Length: 134
Image (tube, rainbow, N blue to C red; front, side, top):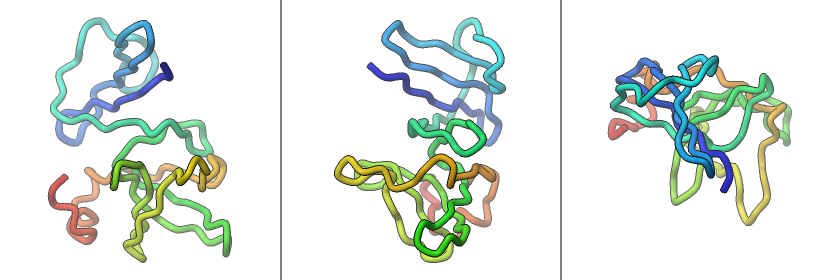
């Protein structure tokens, strides 16, 4: 079993990280600095996608990313979402969803991705993208 991460939140505030391993569940502080005792209080969960950005930060659903386009080398802004049973990026300008994986092929390299924020802290972007059901 591979390691799976979940970001735990109380509304818009990150309160910790849940790590699911073959040995069970572990809770970390929101800064990943130490293991917490017991389970923190939370009301929202964002799943980690198993990738890191260029700075070594774990990427979670609802993260806002800058992604270098491999075709024209331009930086495009997008949001990590779960759609059609796969994680991908909803690009903000074009409103197109592109999966991280397709038929076992990975489309984005970590060195081409930078986390710039989280969607739940950008209410106007939620409205612009028509994602009111989050």
